[in-house]
View 1 (cartoon, rainbow, N blue to C red):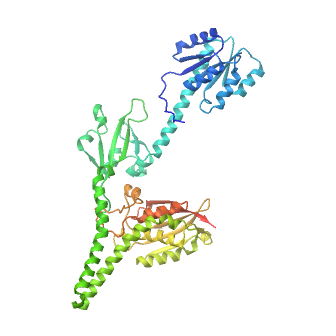
View 2 (view 1 turned 30 degrees about the horizontal axis):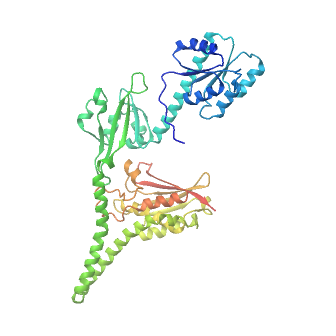
View 3 (view 1 turned 90 degrees about the horizontal axis):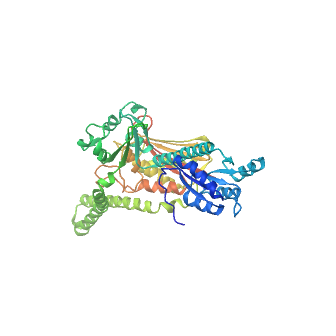
Length: 492
């Protein structure tokens, strides 16, 4: 069955008149023709159902007693059984003014009744009331759909008034601009100028005035690159709203960082991989060639230096390859059915910290979790801890972070494992991109940060495999550092 296209907005309400008597159809049409409705008529029940399916009228004036084929009650029942037609308002037009007929009409799904002979003014009033209610209902449905789309969008949307004050911002816009209580009394321009450069300058002249062709101008918000993050680009487009609206302008913020640097990104990716693999491999090969050709005549100290160089570079190469294999094999790691008791978490933390030479780490498991377990194997959980703690170490200014790990109960048999460090806070785009393959969080992508940026993506796959969720956010206590949180189902 082909998908139906969304119908365009109606300029007129559609009224379908159903009666087996031509004279009655003409009278009703004459009464309603001055009210601006789009009028259609049907002479029997079957024709009425066909027209209802094609026209989707706002109101059906339905005669009860139609001798040929379906009567009005049967037509109404058929409409209510069809999900696509069930919301159409039905007014029964009947000469039967007894209680039993009205009850039968209500049971068949009628919304209202008009008794013959009818008052033209009453007929007009009832049609007008129903079409107004239908219009309000459609507007409400469209608004709900619009609000859902906006809130779930990957783009930022804002409403600003004539004073450039933000009256609404969806979740993504709040993330991009860091909106909160501290920015509640600042204008949109004041907020963005604290974090971004507004380019090109000519497009931002006289903001927020947007007149004529200036409404089509493209504006960019650019956060310059830093030692911790690459440049971040937002494209801003603005729509002037008509007078009387709740706001003066609607703004859209779209992340165009990737589009603005696609060629550079591709080159950086290939360059990073090439450098990470080629540099240690070349060092290993060169050291071994020197040892093979001249090792017998070398002093012991020089020979030992070459051995150490080859070994260290081989370890570095192994680290990169191992990281890639972990990413590829993450699904296999998560497929094991062995659970890990949470009481083992402190031991695993100690083991991982020893492998990373981390000395400032604490771990606390809530007492009510000591007999509970999670669906990750010990190997999988160790990998998760190792990747997160390695990143905490890698981005700490002194490579010696203070790490706090805790496990607490959540409702519905879930557990939250939080890993908090005191390193550096991340920008909004870093918080979004940190789980993506090859993302390293360094400005120049030199390849000198250990690993190939695959670890946290592998972690994400592991968490997904066991029905969990993951989050990363800056510390809420205004201290530098981030919190990585895993929400996992308990097992056993």
